[in-house]
Amino acid sequence: MFLFDPFFWEVVISGLLAGVMYALVALGFVLIFKASGIFNFAQGVLALFAALTLVGFQTGQIPFAHLLEALFGLHASHWGEGMNTVLALFLSLVVMIGLAWLIVKIVLRPLVNQEGIILFMATIGLAFVLEGVGDLMWGANVKRLDVGLPEGPSDFLLDNTGMFIEKLEISAAVVAIILVVTLMIFSQYTKMGRALRAVADDHQAALSVGISLETIWWVVWSISGLVALVAGVMWGAKSGVQFSLSLIALKALPVLMLGGFTSIPGAIIGGLMIGVGEKMFEFYIGPMIGGATENWFAYMLALLFLLFRPQGLFGEKIIERV
Amino acid sequence: MSLKAVETFVTEDGRSIGPVILEVKDITLKFGGVTAIQNISFDIRGGEVRAIIGPNGAGKSSMLNVINGFYHPQEGEVWFKNELRAPMKPYQIAYQGIARTFQNIALFKGMSTLDNIMTGRFTHMSSGIFAQAWWKGAAEKEEFSNREKVEQIIDFLEIQKIRKTEVGRLPYGLQKRVELGRALAAEPRLLLLDEPMAGMNVEEKEDMSRFILDVNEEFGTTVALIEHDMGVVMDIADRVVVMDYGKKIGDGTPEEIRKNQVVIDAYLGISHD
Image (cartoon, rainbow over all chains, first blue to last red):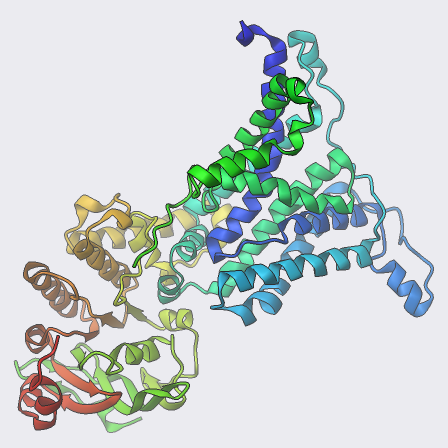
């Protein structure tokens, strides 16, 4: 019976843990899409930028060191030993909040009331600019990110159940769950949270009760920045901080197709489904068809959803009024 | 400050209404080559029910949008509470005490009736995010007093049964009522209603008229409303502004408007939809 097979459970659990990471990236998309109707192509780059900034602070890099060298002949690339992780995380968050403010003022405000596709294009531009700025600021080399999270397989699980589960993935899942619960409480029970949901539903009505759209956008992009930071840290700790990190955004797309673009629970469940589905498919069906199914399974699933349920599992049904 | 700002005014049914709280002066609003509002002036007195009527496309909603800050007129001034109002964003105007409803209902469809009306109290919530996270006590007290106000409004509008219902699922008439509730929750000095009775049946219209009059009498709220149903307007309004093709063609008590030949020719004489 497969239910008693530890191997089966190992596949399920590692799938769930991977799914949490996908959900984390998808969450950033959903937050912005709900509040402003913008599909933020730059979400992946935001995660990369956040991770680069964190490593930069941690290791005491001087931002724009190469630029300063070219312009003024300064040869220093580090200002010291760096700082401890907690302070670096805090400062990175401050940078992300500042970045959110800049995005609202420079990109979003001039484009207010424009078509969704134009805003989408603007975020593509933003992605390229941010990637360039990230490169210029912190350099293009692959960096190791160590935030002190436990690594290696969990001995406890290995000894007692025979399952091989990475400690890093467990802690990533725990952090993600804390983040999601905090966001839920924030959006349900605070003034700002209620305002956020109001803006997501109707811009005009939100303005008429005294809610400032720009403030809300700033808050939303800051929260997305926070989510990007967490996602960047987790993915960065797993596979190093490199520019391909921005491609994790692509992994979030199928999650959004499944969960719907407008649902936070959808993003989470979509992420978990893809994580588990991917691993199960790879382990049980993969060997029959030559393996490497993890590369395309999620996209195939998304395609099926697009064909049969385009609004996703939890998204609002799209009704065109005539 | 004009003289009108202090004197009171006695309406047809002998009610005395207060001094002017809002005055628009020589407003002109253009969209490209189209002039939506041309050189319009009128005032709204504290405690009155002021109606703006006119055929479709007369510029009534645009006028409301000017007062509420959605549109910024090219020319003219808006005086509110005896002060010339600088160009403001709609959310700032909400903080000044002007609330409104919309012609095509603009509710937060995913939220319950209760949450919708609660959101209407936004301008009365002082605690920011951080205060709410750390000063739990003060925030809770505030939430409690806001909840109390919201419950009063729910009782007043007789919508207890739908408190927890998602408003997107409510019938049209009830949605209009919830929207009124949300505007009332702000405890506005001036309440703008854009066709509060459009698309309603006779019974719903009677209910809505009653609510508007009760709001006006019990809370002393000044109401400015746009309405098509002449019977309703003549019944509930203290004074009426008539617009046609972006111009003002009449201004006075319902009785005066009834006798005004220009208005009769332009509006009452011909059939209106």
